[in-house]
Length: 587
Image (cartoon, rainbow, N blue to C red; front, side, top):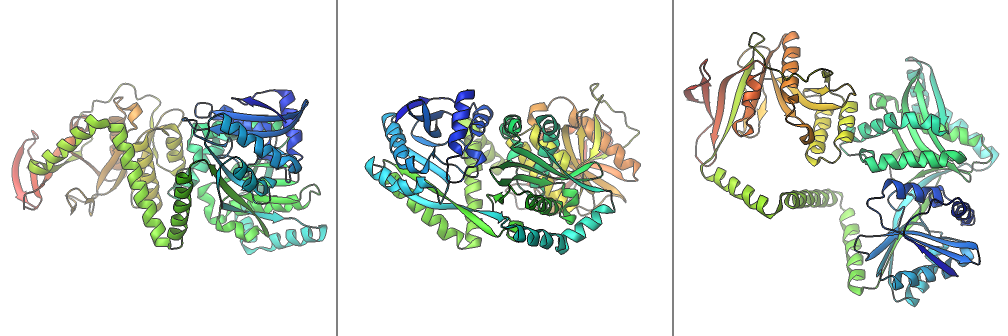
């Protein structure tokens, strides 16, 4: 074999044709193996990938492709598409796989890359069968472990397809959902296959996907601009051959469920689905998948609907077969080899005890976030923060200041409020916020907290949005009576009937100092007042936001103070009309 090494994925029509011809010689051709997939990944993640493309030729004929990437230290190689593809593999005819694997490992050794990590390899692949011998011959320690089971719907014979379609149509959940949805409007399904049709819907699809994850208390990978770019690149490249299919379920003209998927060599892939969370009770995702399977049954060229990675419970209701994938690590270091085996064994032991797994994940998450904060702050920042905390503990106190709003008080609002409006907060606006501020860890944490609060329905959320419906400030309101202040370990009593507290205000870090807080606070107070409530708000003394609060019609009424180390209860300090402290009393 003649090897050619590239440090990029060439956008070469001849290479693409040869590459994709080789894909068809694989044991089971997959869309993830194509040249277009690797090219899309390279374009989307260009600033974080170091491609290492190994091509093998016999004469001018391409006989092997290893689309790899290395880490920044050039110490470990892995599949280029490992984070985006459900199945990964070295490409060659199965009969030549062992030879090709040998030359790939030899090339890595010459390049000074001591470790190779290959994940999501189909268990039936010839690569797995050839790995032990190849690793031994090249001096690598090999460890292979299972990674996932990919649920599938094997469509079977014509008679089996008819039976499957009938069973799907009779499912109680499907019939109930469809009958309920029809009452809201005509229900239809469509499949977009051209780039002209796909491109306009990707934005709404991404927002729906992020909103769905927020409803589950998680962050979707589509928050990342890189991941959204990947879907765009895949759509543009694969639509030329009709291999990408964006499926939608609609009520009237409103899409309520999506699947960004693929049709390739007899497989219809359920790759990235989502649905409108406001329709969750009617299982629109379940209905869309049922319809896709039924339509696949009517296509003789289709043999399987692949539900892909993930152990979601709904997949068990549909699948009648599964495909397993494996993770293989090859390393020159015996110590690293043993550490990986120990880590895997320990992880398996923890997983066998559900509560232990949750606890370990929580501890690891806390350690990771703490480490990130430390790295961002730097050594001097950590020392300064530590001294501030120590000083506060010794002679500090916690003081919360309370303000009441009056529409008669003058307001000084920023001039740049045109195009801004206050809207009720919902998951869609939170999703747009998560996408807009993906790099701000504090804002993402706030959005997750807000999503949980939305689900619990314990307060009313608001968002100040611009003309593009991008949120620039968030805030919340709820009854004053019973409002809890964890800093003081206190539950409030309302000073009057219908008092409402505006709290947990947040402007993303990248757009602060533009007056969004004051505009949102003023509009929220006006809205509460119009609905018959008496608006209040609060802030800590350390927050230095009092002047901004007073500028939009709020007046300081009192504060509550708790000494840090002193043995005393919370004190309530009232203010006179000049906002001076005049009285102290035990609460």
